Length: 359
Image (spheres, one colour):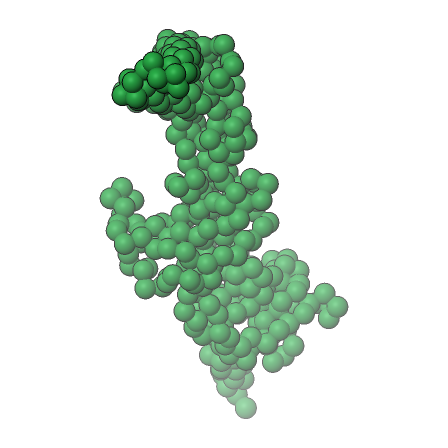
């Protein structure tokens, strides 16, 4: 055989071997390493579930939020709470000095005197009536006046009770009490500030019961078909990254928020110990439609700048680098959208060692 044919034959063999390789494979296979540091898995098409993640914030139930306004006009003498502080029902959160309070106590004392005098007059009239010295009509008039005085006494007594005073309390300083147990969301005044009961724009304090808390997520209208009321969800709250809380969609708003152009999705969570605070950030994860995809362990993928690749086992017991395109990333797996086929073997453990050996 001539030397010309001996030269062409090896060249044809190299071209044939090159043509058999996967288009995205590195033409220089990485050398095999010891079996105890490299593990492979056979990839198959698996069913995966898409997840729709909604950005969310924690909010108190609006029906459990109380804005405390002064019942009378006056000056704030003391304020005993700060935002974020826990308060109990009936706890005094401040003191208001009010001339109206002094007037209410004066009205009660006057009504008490008038009622006592009316009782005394009625008792005398009853004796006169028994001795036929007074006419029945005059007695009836005194009885009506006595009833009216006692009615006025009861009205002024009730006014004192509504203001937080007792009948025997001589102080004119009005205690401001919390009507519910909860957390102080906002304080709207300071000691020394004058408060008006009728035209006051700011509440003295805003208190919310957060035994349960709302998680409000933003849902864009193009995803509205992916969620429904009663659908199970997972909630992750900032500050507690390792905790996953389960719940259901309690409500989906019927109108679009004009600011965010989203619908509000509501999930209600129990909040024992008040660990979850209003305005915390959260994520609502909604399981969406299932689909088919090739999935590999996260440890199989090497990320090198803008490129991603895996090592594929070759028939000659070596490992070749294969460029791949990634899809969704899950807890311990990654979806491969392009670059692998069903049934191929990829390195799941030791890919970094192969990368270093092939460098």
